[in-house]
Structure formats: structure tokens, C-alpha cells
Length: 246
Image 1 (spheres, one colour):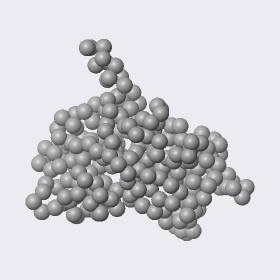
Image 2 (image 1 turned 135 degrees about the horizontal axis):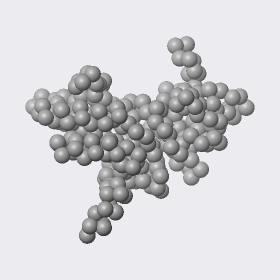
Image 3 (image 1 turned 90 degrees about the vertical axis):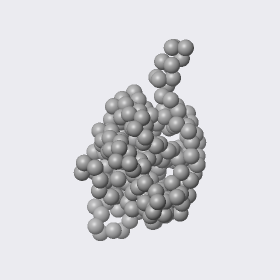
């Protein structure tokens, strides 16, 4: 997925009210950018960080800049816009680039289902069960190389897992796909200490046949594209408990 407009580098002054970020452009101007991320953005919203913004001249938008990336000191990037995974994955799904879902040729986004919910993608193909795919953007890293989800309590995410379970009970296929929007992570696990209810709902969903996929991304100020699948690890607290029981 290529960005619509070339991104420009800036310095973060502060993020506030969740969806606003004051930034200092390289020409010395201070501007306010839209932050399309309702999460805590733990470790990604510290004043002084290098960020990349997407300018726009759309009269329908209140702000002329959108915050898209954080550039880390080690040269890696994190994508902070939670709408990007759906755009990038739609391209990948339509091109049959995700091996586990490549048998489906019809991709429909934002389809109503369940209890007043919308599935990110409904995949259909004659002769196959309908496939409901929910996407989550992963940006949290508390240990080097380890991506985690969620970065804050997510009642909405927990509800989505319950909706996927209902689809499996109706004979459909359901997939929870985590897209790691960081180039410095090679592993993934649930942050059960941050979202215990979500972690419990995830375990229950797997018992009912909800599949899980984790993919990494390639990120630059030009584009964000799908990279490679990675395994999902066991949360440290669970691993420690299993070790103590041996």
C-alpha cells in the first residue's frame, strides 16, 4: 500500500486527546496532525520522536496532516495509523498473497454481521465456507524484537472475538489476523497483563475453532506492504507458570 501523498519528516511535540498531535516541521512551523490511533501508543508518543506525516489538501478534513509513522533511532519504523492494515491487507487478499487465505477470490470489506458489528473482510468462494477475517494492528514492543497486542484494554476487541466464535458455530471459517506494524519485531504474543479479558477471550476463541495468523510488514516513508508470517508465542506469565509446574 503506497501512501497517497509523499510523507514529510517532523518532530513530535505532544500527542493529546488521543487523536491530536502537535508536531514541528523541518521548516520551523508548528502544526497539528490527526492521529488515527485510539490506543495508548505506549512507547510511540514521546516528545522529541521523529515522525512522518502525510499532508493533504482535502477541504473535508479539519487537519491538513495525518500522522503515519514513527522513525526509531535504529532506523526501524512503526506504523501508527490503525486504518493502514485494512488497506494493505485488502491489496494482499485481492492478490492472493496470504497463503492461508489464497483460495478465496471474492473480498468484501466492512460487512455487517453478528450483534451490530462489521467484519473487516468477508471472503467467499464457491465450494468453500465463508471466511470472516478480523484485523488488529500491532505496535507495542516492551521487549526487544517482541511485538504485543493489545497496548490498552480493548472491550471492542474482546467483543470481536466473541463474534468470530459465533461464526464458527454457524459453520463458517473465522480468522483473527494480527498485522505487526513494526520493522524491529520478529516475534509476537498477547499482552495478557494489559488485556487479561482479551487474552481469555482469545483462548476461548481458539478452542471454538477461530484461527489466528500473524504477519509482519515492510515499512518505509513510501509504502507499507505485507512481509512474512511469524509464530505466536506464549505470554511470559503463562510460560513461567508452566515452567514452575514441571
